[in-house]
Length: 278
Ligand SMILES: [Zn+2]
Image 1 (tube, helix red, strand yellow):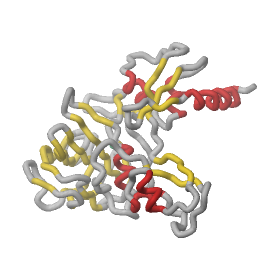
Image 2 (cartoon, protein in one colour):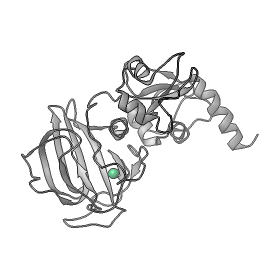
Image 3 (cartoon, rainbow, N blue to C red):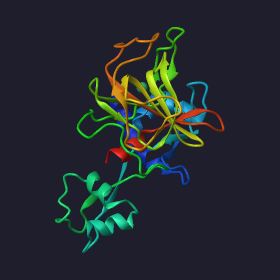
Image 4 (cartoon, protein in one colour):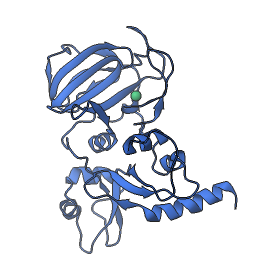
């Protein structure tokens, strides 16, 4: 058996071992198998070795067979079967999701033509901020994947490996950026890493971070209150250097979520963004 085949067989066996951990919204448990590496496990869960390390508080790359790891469950949908005489609103009610989100999660389906046994996608609810607004308008951005905890290398003190603390969404320079939730602007202005950025406190413990803007909307400054869906600025490629640096990477919006306690730290914003994008 060649290496690729072995990996395939191995990964099939491993998927069977996956169990969802109750109480952790979007995480699962994984048992380390022979020949596993952090990279391989990351690949299985559409994430990076860095994210696996971070989730588990690991400081080295070595693994032990049988070791239990927390892994992200990146799926923004679960599958469900249509019941006899089912209707979309009944399915929405049964799974406790809004009908419009359920319909948006199944764009190719004709809601008036469903039958028993048909598989449909149930969108996964994030832990909070269910009424959030996606920060870019439909049709103005490229489909995005989860780049949270990917390796990034730029720092103000020269190259160093760090964990990406948000999700990047590709969009053209000048694309309008909207506040995902109501809140108060606690930071606006230049930051060497994030360029022209805005940090908005949406509740006592949570801040949303928008980075690499080309320009701010009128009135965007520290202390200003914003509403959900309010224009805050425009996509750009600012950052990675002193004030005014731009073009060091392709234009995109970097969106991050930070919790203030117990320690100021980033959380994975992916499921939130996917839910808002529906
Ligand atoms: Zn980023």
